Image (cartoon, rainbow, N blue to C red; front, side, top):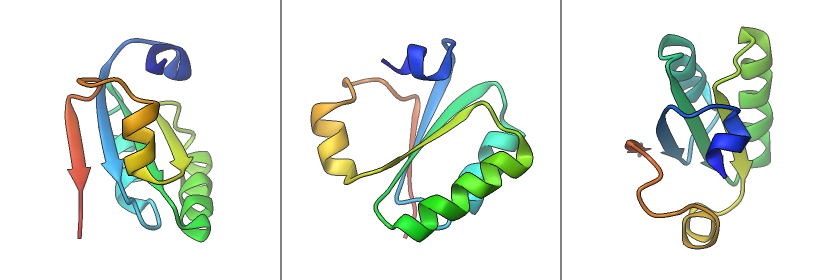
Length: 88
């Protein structure tokens, strides 16, 4: 339930494989009207991202450390995001 996870209803952005999270944190900082969810499997990257979220005091970003295919198949309803970002 993304509304409950974020405590509001807003446009939603999903970033799959956010690496160290710098882009996710910057997007959340510069687009506070949107909610941002990042999914990453690499624990150090998740930790780095969480530190950035805390440093910036962001309330509009959440992260998951899990395989994005499994999350999308079992935990996120179709059409839940207005934007999906995948960087290589």
